[in-house]
Image (cartoon, rainbow, N blue to C red; front, side, top):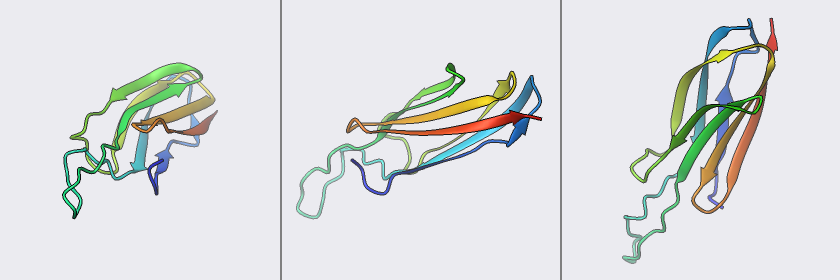
Length: 109
């Protein structure tokens, strides 16, 4: 497990059905490419978040595949049309098999 990994998301608290909202995500992760060497000359193993998904009530909103060139602490901002109240599920997949998930509910307002 990568150390210090902390996912964060920002969603509106309430939505109007059919409204397009902006979602913001950030995950604290070092994103080691596997191409750098440590002070002893040994390769540092690759450790990146290789996939990010967001679903709303089980329906996919976005699915992103990431490669070693992705920056440290990847940030995503994207829009989604919301049919009404429900829950967004944000998921990040790590090379080491770890999965980080946050659920955020929005209310109809």
